[in-house]
Image (tube, rainbow, N blue to C red; front, side):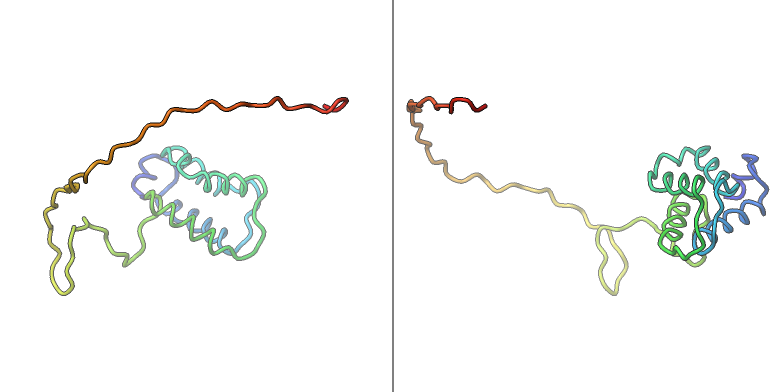
Length: 153
């Protein structure tokens, strides 16, 4: 992450970690003033990587923070969702000690190693006996005209 930011010339390595961590901390439990430079930096970073259009929620939250700011109160769900989205996109590094997700095997037996199992072809059962369908002609129905009341529409 830091190499990308440094290579793209946005900010220095230490500065990127500081402003992004500070923004997440501020969203979590502090006040964020309107037109905060950290929000603009994150907006520009996501727009440059073409990630801004992938999450309408994040786009609206950053726009609302930019225009209105945030009052000083605790917002753990918003901060968690923001961090999860940024980690998913690779803007933030993965959690320390987080398990690496590898290829998933088809069959996992308890107490033994994972093994791949060949798939069997799906065969549909043969169709049952067919019943003949009786076709009846449509009968004509007489329709009486509906009388409309006079003077009303």
